[in-house]
Length: 320
Image 1 (spheres, rainbow, N blue to C red):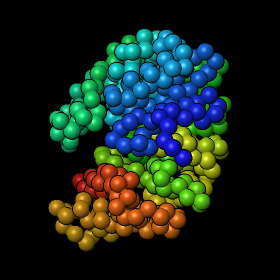
Image 2: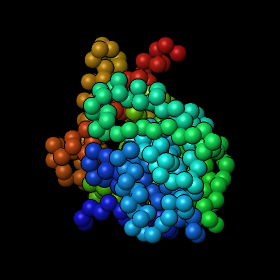
Image 3: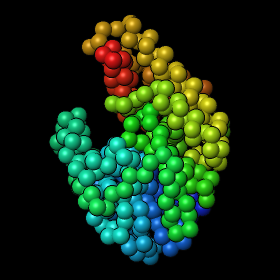
Image 4: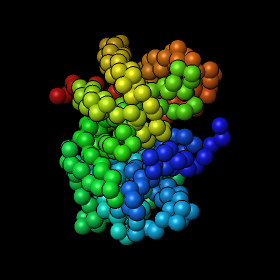
């Protein structure tokens, strides 16, 4: 199947590829309720014109967008918030209470990411990060609801990947916009056995018990599908959720084993090697036939970030 920047998923939801680094890496979603719209996730600042082009193509006035909703403030999810809010005059930003200050004043987010990537790479990947006026920001708590036209959205506090993470339950589609809480599932790894799912443990707030509880919270909704940011909708979330929870346990066991075998200055490299072996073995068992080079292209960035996050978690336990 050929790649499409936009894909209508039914239930008045459109998947938008954010064009971050490669195709089918990160998605955001346009949701319609009557004559009103919400945008869930924003991608990076480079994604803003992609979203605005879709609105124009469909004859949707910018004033019809009622809400912009990043699930959390990591920049692959929220880097485009400021630019999008500047272009959508009637929109309100709905963001986790712990993340709001970073959208109002993104200086710390920018400084942290620049320190990791360097100025040039940061600008190339994320672009400009613009602030949002505090008067246009709301912070829904666990169980709070909003309406988009006649459509109800329910916010669920879901820490574990990040403390500033919520998911959005959409009863009209029997679906949940899960951000990173329900893991990653890239289309190129889907086989006749279905999607291949894996956890994301990126720095710096990975919390295994909290993530297990959050996955369980989503599964308790008995939703029919999950709308992943990485990447797209997946069906049969009960089976996927059980697999994901088992993998979180495996990650913890793997990290503790590796930490007992190497010196601290070797920890991240050793974790990455162990994670690669673990995931490649699981992918092969799932029936994926991509060669190792292609698998590295699909999973390499996640292997690096996940090993860094596991190292941060291990070190934090030593000082707790």
